[in-house]
Image (cartoon, rainbow, N blue to C red; front, side, top):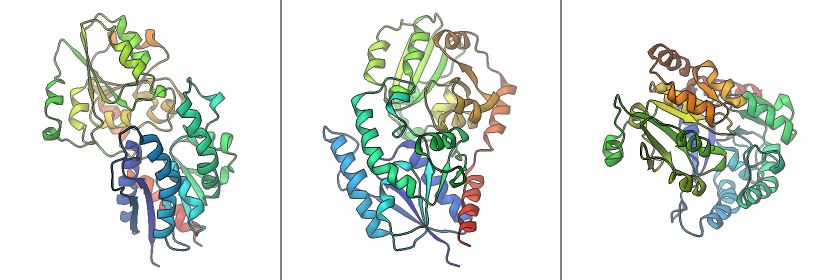
Length: 359
């Protein structure tokens, strides 16, 4: 039997960090399971990551150009795996009943009134587009693989997909690589010392990332803190950062791929998100012996279990920061726990489900 599978990985420049991790991990995992993997990625002639027409370009490529590209590339009745539900827009264009979908979260599909944070016009626009373009594709998928039980329950609740058509396949985690050369001056700002605590955050400029709770905690912190953020702050957070005392230094670093050395220079990774489908950074941190503080949301308790310390507001976070002590035993336990999230286990589960459905 020719085990060929088309892995739809999206448009270069529009892929989220998690999408790139999932695509890479699944490709290697599927190949280990004996699949011939055809990676379907569209590479635009011009960059889509910046510029005043970024949103227009994103809509055109995600909802119109990429679906037609997939229709052209993927043959009839092919075995297809969509690595990110953001690309479920392509499913109605593919002439096959063997389409499987990797569902990260419902950020773009959860009803606006039921979000745990205040949404902006952009969120409303994305929800409307997702409702008319992504939702039909999701409903057409032969089977959905949710990356957590929390996400599975959300799919059932908000998208009315039958429970039997959803499986939980926890993401694997690729240990972040080291790349001192490309990081240059960034690393000089991040030096562990006995008198200054280094905290780290990872993520885009999104309100759901809840950086404000960290700022509020640090406003009352008298200790010397070095805060390193990999990604971008939203404008509201940037304004709030100006009110921090001189004992708090903040570095904002572009979201580069190889950040293993940054993790290792940090004492604590803080994940303050109000909403996640899985949450990769804390598991990456555990792989590199960095302590994890997480906002107390259901999916965090499911994925990180007792290997993170939890907070619900700035006062609880401040207390955790002030009382932090390096706990070698707890960090070692977290390291071994993190090994359960790997792409061999994930791809084996998915591959078996796909193979079984062929007979």
